[in-house]
Image (tube, rainbow, N blue to C red; front, side, top):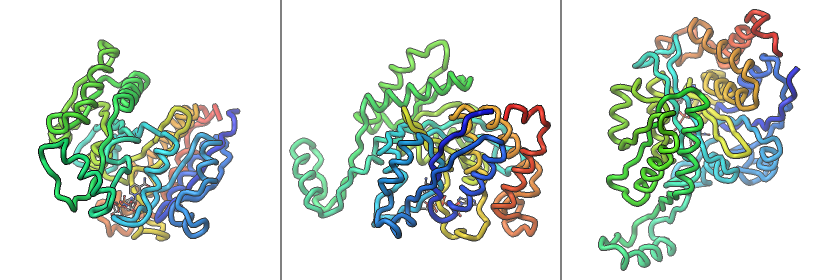
Length: 372
Ligand code: NAD
């Protein structure tokens, strides 16, 4: 009998509560025991505590060291900064790992895609160092850098700072290589725009090349420009294996790769630090489907599979992963987005798709479930 795993569960906003409930039920169906610490963040937390990220939620994750998190809405342009970004920074979850693979039954432009995005999570333009146009801070920065650069900035410019460090780059690239070794992957591709951003992306590229030397003969390495990578990904995705990227490119390419394998509904993710890990789908809170029992729970359930692997429940991860693949391949008890047309009357809701996955877990032969 395996031990009980304490996990912080954050339902999140929009479709979050529905898809996290589906994931929790599927995880429990594997027979692994969990002690869930349910905590709030995002809109629900603002309503109750006046802050989108309460101290108690952070304290719970620091205690359990593992979190399963639903998507959280971020107001665009104004309002509070992204809770997702804040959580990753606050807990130093420096590596965002997003496996993208094709599934039988999921319509997509390509078959047999199997690649992994490793995105740096703490630096780059996502570091949250921003100054509004016309603010005293922005003006001061513009005045300070004016004598240092030969290209004067417009005085009313808004400023976002892009910090990239050798230490941050080395940590993520090393993680990508170690991930490749641990998962039998053959190649790491570092993605950058070092021809234009010579200092920041140049440092990321140089660091990648240096780290790669330590893995020579074990994992192949190449580095590519981000624009060329976008084109090659949509022409020849099978040429890629593990991609390691700075924060912003990682965010954008993750969605591109989710598109390659059939969309956000089937794209799981993990945010990993030295001591803490947080698992969440790549997709957002899809507010228009909130409370409708319509959203596809697959990405959240597959994030749960990554969590099972992380806590050492490889057998349960295997069984739940197989059950998800079975339901997807059958294509019967699946949500609207996995049907041939969006109006297909045979589409089922979020909870019914989770029920089908649970039934598929329970239908597995006893030998496959023996290690409960
Ligand atoms: P989104 O991922 O919520 O939605 C993009 C499209 O995909 C929409 O058409 C949506 O309906 C659809 N979609 C997403 N998930 C789906 C699912 N499980 N099943 C079926 N359809 C699904 O992205 P968005 O609209 O850009 O963002 C909405 C909100 O989510 C924003 O506030 C954004 O900041 C936030 N967001 C949060 C996270 C996170 O918590 N990690 C990630 C991305 C976006």
